[in-house]
Image 1: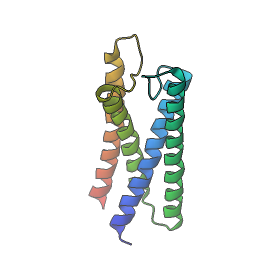
Image 2 (image 1 turned 135 degrees about the horizontal axis):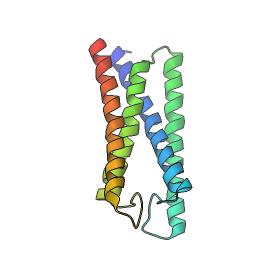
Image 3 (image 1 turned 90 degrees about the vertical axis):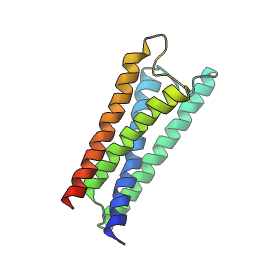
Length: 147
């Protein structure tokens, strides 16, 4: 197996963990603790809860799969830690950005909050996703320059 394949796998597997982590943060904090929204808000509260459960199931699958794949790569001594960190941040930021732009603005399946001025929330949500994504891209580029 080539180093390029190890690089792709280190980054990609960790991206799954980043996606699962950011989905968990969103679901636990904003869906459960603050109860600002559900994954799908355009139906009954029961359907909103079911949609949150499906999101939770998907985040857990991403976390478990990503961690197991990273463990296998590490046991084979093929894990490239710097690229795994890059992948983690790319996954986390990508999820946050996708959620903020696609789910909130394009599809409008839910908003961050209701009955408030959304501009500050939207800017903060999308900016945090961009920051995480840029951190990941920066770590990736730093690794490529060193290699």
